[in-house]
Image (cartoon, rainbow, N blue to C red; front, top):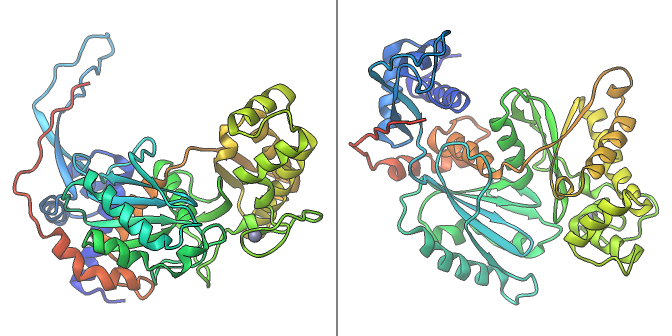
Length: 422
Ligand SMILES: [Zn+2]
């Protein structure tokens, strides 16, 4: 295969950014060496990315402050060296998280945040007669909190079945009005920059991988307003023929007569979504309460009652089935189940082991983890807007690649020097 220079350059840029995401902070020499690039090649890419404000320089002493030699004496600090990291000083992307009722908004730097923080939020009820218009108006009001930031793009996390290459929500069981809304156009009327729709569980899975680079093969299942999953294989989202993947929540559960937002009866998520659990809780024990904190207290006091065990068994059966079919030894659980007393995750983990064939002779891991949605969105933003792949599977990247340089053209001559004191 012959690479045209620009494509080769793009691959090198992408490799360098990935390496920096893994390392956190690195010198030019470290980057060149670890990537097997010549120093001039790595240096040229670094200069370009510094000019685009994607990277920033930090000054650190050769010996980290606080480092000690074998006798316990502080090592003499050397002349400061300049190292590089992804820009953590300014928000470069705007992230929007669309929920069933609540939308949250955050400015994101290019570094990996330790935890998701969404400082601005607004609500739109699905009963609103013109929900898309109401959403646009509230987004415009929320935009005032973010000033005139020159964002590289807006990353919109959305639930449901999402055609990311076409920037459309095809089907959304819990927020049907979003299926006919052109979110990319709506957002661009507020911020005139590229907009990418990202399926919400895919963002979580990418974020988990970014924060745990050694965790390369896993199914992530998120529990919240619904239940959905995403699969990462060899560090990349599993490629599948249709823009639908990980829809575990809509696995039918025998004997379950609850109506699901997808139009079917008996889906697993009607039992174990936040709303499903609270519905079962108040039906099983009307005196127990009907709030999430009361459910927490109830489980702490009474353990896993039959109705909860049945819901967890249904979720575990769907998860184990997915592990058996795809061939994965690990499931990462995020969201509401991880907020409940530890007995809940312990029960789920045992039930997954029971159903996963790999556990009969090998080891199946069932881990709980925090939601890293913003990290996943940043990963998508970097891949598709900062260093878009010109390949045929990235129509959006191609569509926006002509816009990206304009968005990035503002060249900052002042690189940032920051001393790190520990
Ligand atoms: Zn359903």
